[in-house]
Length: 459
View (tube, rainbow, N blue to C red):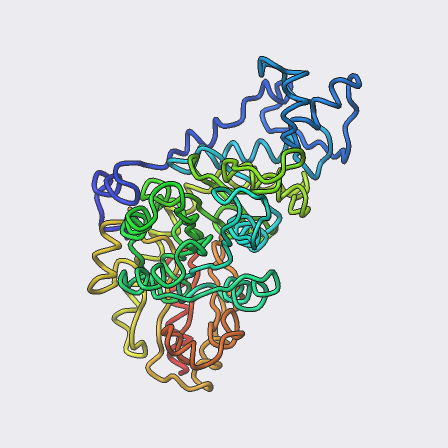
């Protein structure tokens, strides 16, 4: 069964007229960069020898943004800085970052991290800060200590916002971002203290949709360019089928472990964004300065050590060569399976983009070009025994968390991925005891249906 959407219509959604190109992904690396090697070579060195003292000075001047050094050694901006140390960057990282930038419509930059959660942490600590004592009220005196985040969200993100961010002195405020008035009220309450607006759509695990364009427009209307907080979208679930940067977001976050990696053999994360958003940071030689947000991210990644290994970056590059093709096929499989589940006598409700109702359905049609491959469904029998029997009876589908793997996975959000959230909060988020989450892989869809059917028959 194929996705019931014409290609022309798909290209007009998920970013208003843009289609992810597999050719762009495959041609991002040029063999000349690797002395003719058709796959980029892995460079295992942790440190690199300079060709001379001046070259070393220039490399650090560029890495640390030392204006006086760059002005003295590279007044025309024409010299290429030599590599320094693998914590700053490696050729493998640069190669996969170039591919990610080519894949994401609207992207001006892309930075790889060792995990999706490390990227989320970098977002928080870069967009938010306590009072920066500069003596310049227009630049750094305002606190940016509030994060607005949507719910429901991935359990790890919830833990970061509620358990870890307060240790930095930041306050995370959960907002139902499907309700624009609720977002407006939060902005009125916290004003310029909001440093980051963080949204996950479709939401994990209920597929709840947030109008990215509407939030972006609201932020622009209420703040303007200068004081507007960073607006970030976790696009892990949607992948190639949604283009937040074209819809007004500043940054996309991805767990590279999921669809981008696709083989459950690595952990990685990406921040991908567009230029234009400025950020106040403490520089290495000029006190507090205003710099492009991507420069602040890069500086903080270096200092905090959120840098992946060359081996992981190379493996991710290899897997990403089939990322777009895998996602298209997995979405096709998931569509068939979701429609079949919706007719099953043991299933109360299916959460899948093409089966959403009301406002969520309208947003899906406006904002996404395809459904991706995540399904959530509720058993009619929501008892712990029914859930356990169903999950323990699966034979082809693996009982495992994570998603985007070439194999299909099933898990129980209430007791697994979202178990750090109280039952009361879970209920508000729509995470019931009978909710099952599926990540559909590349098996034949008829085989997955047969496996789900035999397990449901035992409930």
